[in-house]
Amino acid sequence: MHLARFPRRFLAHLPTPLERLDRLSAELGGPEIWIKRDDCTGLSTGGNKTRKLEFLMAEAEMQGADMVMTQGATQSNHARQTAAFAAKMGLACHILLEDRTGSNDANYNNNGNVLLDHLHGATTEKRPGGGDMNAEMEAVADRFRAEGRKVYTIPGGGSNPTGALGYVNCAFEMLGQFNERGLRVDHIIHATGSAGTQAGLITGLKAMNAGIPLLGIGVRAPRAKQEENVFNLAVATAEKLGCAGVVDRADVVANTEYVGEGYGIPTEGGMQAIAMFAELEAILLDPVYSAKGAAGFIDLIRKGHFKKGERVVFLHTGGAAALFGYDQAFDFAGRWQAAG
Ligand SMILES: Cc1ncc(COP(=O)(O)O)c(C=O)c1O
Image (cartoon, rainbow, N blue to C red; front, side, top):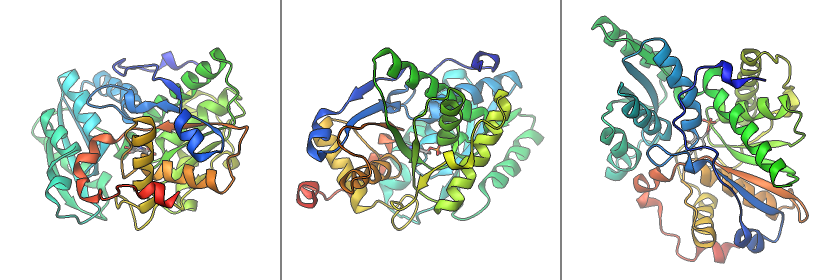
């Protein structure tokens, strides 16, 4: 497999660190916990979208775009990383923000990722929740095209086969780190949403015959839908890479029991996870994605799904910029100790 065949803009800070979390491992008394720091990919506080954008934005450049468009929820990390990447490349950026939560909170609507979108010079438009956002985006892109702009559109979350190459690359990078450091890894776990992270990872892991099971913790869709989305994208990514058929349906596993009331609505378990990671390891999670992923991970450790003697890597997909849009959700002093 030869990723250098694909156009790529090398702007992410790679490789990201791989670190052992001693205090969290001791607190939970289960497996040895490691963290892959994709919250440190650079460009405006980092996160998983930066890896995808290395391939997407190179494609935009190849196609002669002078503007990129994307869409996401109000506090979308993907939107913010796209705005940052576009700023770095000198491209205009326009973003459609979907109101998926109905929150009227001023910080939710203007601070955190939204503040950074605008700081990077992106323009934004709002849409009510529940519409076909990719179709809305194409309609707006056509408006700009009619005015003479060369617009490259990026689907929500950067999740198409081009974007997923960023996580094929992450699978290579992680396996290299495990091998160099003599780490036998039993599981990798992460938050899964628009599917590109999990699809790219499973394609890369299977193509290398890594033999490491991957578990996605869902943040939005029910399990069958989430697994179908990931599998379909993995199939298309493998085809793009020239290794069609490398991913089996059984390789794609999502646990969607930690979504709570819905996308973007913080959960008790997620807020406890934020407190634990911050107080024990000085690591910042976000309430929408990485905290729900970590909440699932912590609960599965407590239920014995991941055991003492095993080594598990939590892929931190970023998102901490959203904390400043969710300050109203923080009222957790001492909560995780009480619950633990
Ligand atoms: C912080 C964070 N974690 C996880 C994800 C989920 O990744 P994916 O959309 O590739 O499934 C996202 C997506 O927006 C994210 O912003």
